[in-house]
Amino acid sequence: MIYLRDPNTIVVPRLPNLEPDRFWMALRFFGYEQSLRDWVSGLQPLDPESPTYAQDLAFWSAVSAKLEWAKYFERDHPMIEGARQALGITEQQLDDMWTWGLS
Image (cartoon, rainbow, N blue to C red):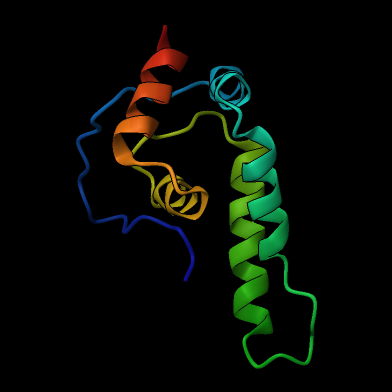
């Protein structure tokens, strides 16, 4: 599964986008930066013989590129939701972190 949004879907954001420096600052402040990096690192497929290798590689490539090169981060982006779930953060905790990052 690749975290890409359907281009035909109109999404009204709950919270404004975060610039990369604000996104990473919030992750650092709340202690999730390394956990997020570890999650992304763990997505990288290691076995080219795996039947899902190409799909897994595409997924890891999309997620790692988004985190490294994004011009902004959308609170409601599917990748952010996937990371939230993987890190065991509640929606309210993420909203609080996001709001802090906006301040």
